[in-house]
Structures are given as C-alpha cells and as structure tokens.
Length: 254
Image (cartoon, rainbow, N blue to C red; front, side, top):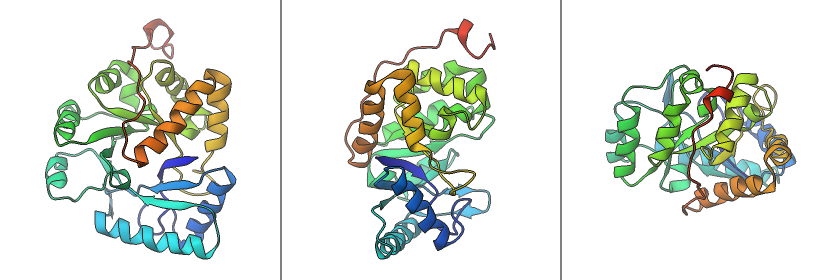
C-alpha cells in the first residue's frame, strides 16, 4: 500500500517532532501494510516554511534512519502547498515540489473557505503542465455546504484526495457523509492518511480501505490503491466522469 500524504519528517511542521516520532510513525505504517510513504510537509503555513531542496535532503536522512532500524518502508518527497496568490511564481522559480517529482501537485484550501481565485488558480496550474490534487476537501466547510464547487473543480481537471480518518468517522458525521458522497459521485481519486503522529492523527489506512470495501466494494479499493501507485510513478490516474450529489440526500442541508 502507498500513502501519498503524511507529515513524517521530524521537526519541520505540525507532524513528527523528533526522529523517534518519525521512526514510530514508520513502524505504525508498516504494521498497516504500507510500504511507501510520501512525506508532504507544509510548504508555507503559519510559522512553517519548507522549500524543495530542504525536503529532499530531509527525506534522504529519514530513509537512512528507517533503513538503520530495518523498517520495510520507503519515504518519497512531496509537499503540501496552501493555495496562495504566488503559486504561479513559485512554480516558475521551481520552488514547489510535486509528489515524487511528478506532474501531481498538492493544493490545500483553508479549512473553512475556498478562495475566490481558486478556479482560476487550478486552471493556471494545469496550463503549467501540472495536475492539481486538492487534499482533504471533505474537511472544508464551504465545500460541504456548497458541493457544486468541488464538482466543478473536478469536472475541470482537478483531482482530490480523501483523508482515511474521515471515512471512518474520526472527523465527525458530516465529514464522513461528504466523503462517502465524493466516492459515490466519482469526485475523489485517492485515499491517504495525512498522518501527523501515532496517536491522535495516525495512519488508519487499513481501516479506511476495509470501510470502502464494505460500503462500496472491491472495485473502488483497487482503483484508489492503484491510483496511488500511478501517481508516484507519474502516470495518468484512473478517473471517471464526476456527477453531482442529489441535493435532497446531501447531509440534510437542502
């Protein structure tokens, strides 16, 4: 199994604090059946700043540490970028780090809102030759209340990644229901842990895929797991025509 979104690098953002924390996370990942982890520290978020070269350097150090502890996990480089008005300039200056040097670029929205310029920014990213992957959209309050917005982003070429914990109810019932809707409506393409530690924000990838299997069947499990492999290999991922959720059934909000 491949986990494309984690905060396993030590001491650089709100994820692992020490090398010991990172090793504990790698061990937990291995126990879940995860063999490949993408480290996606925040690029710019509050007091955190992690540029491309420092992330690559820290990934090399962590891989050596994991090897020394004989943990059967490999870490790949990536980055979680909060959407901002400078993204085009940062792409031009080679400051952003796509997932494992691929064409896939993580884009994070604020938790409560979607910037007005998001549609244009996602389009501009694609014009630069990258495919934006909107991370944890199911945890965004504006998208929960206005699901047509994410539908249009996906319809226009963006991909999305659900958080494993959302699917099993760790972020509440509304988030879980919206995550289910996104699978049902072909509006999501990946499941990842967004793991920050081994307690409050752990991997739960095995539990999430068991949940997908029981609720949606094997085909979705295979597609979502294959997409993670295709992403890190820089191949085109599986995507089906998105549909809009039926409003009368959506979270009781309509």
